Length: 168
Image: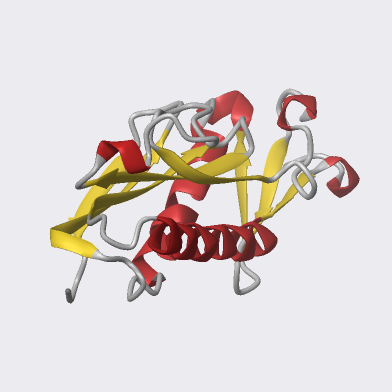
């Protein structure tokens, strides 16, 4: 059905999840150290599947704390980023009609077809991973505004979801 298994393009989401978790922890700690008095209103994990990356975006009580920083590649309020180039294959090299085989955290495997689903073939699974990471994140190091909104967005599609952080 999917052709020769040797031709399957394998993407390691287990390693991706660990890397995104670490990047998020480091971004939160760095922001807290650099701007101890600034309150965070929104924390976003922004992903771009074919760009093989994820970014931390912050909306705060002081825009100068995040705007125009060294991480502003796709968005002005980026405060951290990670690229998956070292362990993701070249997604454009997947032969037409062949699936991506995505190895998830916990051992499950998902097969998805770029030729049938377009960018969603990688964006939907990455969106799910980013939601899981943000929902499970330790946010105790975040100096919160009255409400802290958590958001996951995909840069090349309409996939987005927001919720209010628990606790405070």
